[in-house]
Image (cartoon, rainbow, N blue to C red; front, side, top):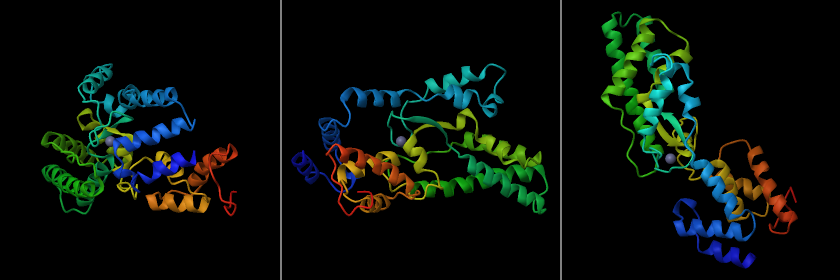
Length: 284
Ligand SMILES: [Zn+2]
């Protein structure tokens, strides 16, 4: 068994982002050969992640979306929008784990609204026309900043999202309404982003990567839970402390309880004699 692993590892680049399809297949073959899981299990898991996301719940049942349609017409419209999508992630083109996501994020709608409200409150603008103009101009500026952020963050080789003129003016109109009606509730303001024309399908990973709060989003290639197992099965650290270092080096910033949970896999495999843990490991 160790012979297979050593041979296998020597052929693969250090970084998972440089692995070829053949090399990923070899890892899967190895895990199946080792009895970690079988073909039926892994295929069933992939099929489950292929099933289109539940927009009936996430979009059609959402009051913000419903507000744009006559009573009982929301699902009809959501369905039409859904069927017309490509069925691939807008960023990386995978078909797996797709979720409906906003083109213009809620955070930007909130930020622009509060900035325009500040201009009104400080008396720097005082007509409805000026509010409309500032809403559009500030949204444009914020979106430019967001595009810069994404250019830096996304290394997918795909084009950056485009914010059409009609989408921008639709969102700016919503911001304008919030400002002239003196709405200060963040939830209601951010609800402006909840419009079908502002929705797109993205995979779970690409959704996470573009969140400004996710510090190292662009660095990581796999999702956290996948990367934890990749490090364990490919790098095979023999000490928990080394595992934690590898996780940090991969770009993971979360509390180390996640690493300790993942280390359970090393312990379980060690019980069966298929994973080596060094005697000086703190969790030997
Ligand atoms: Zn994606």
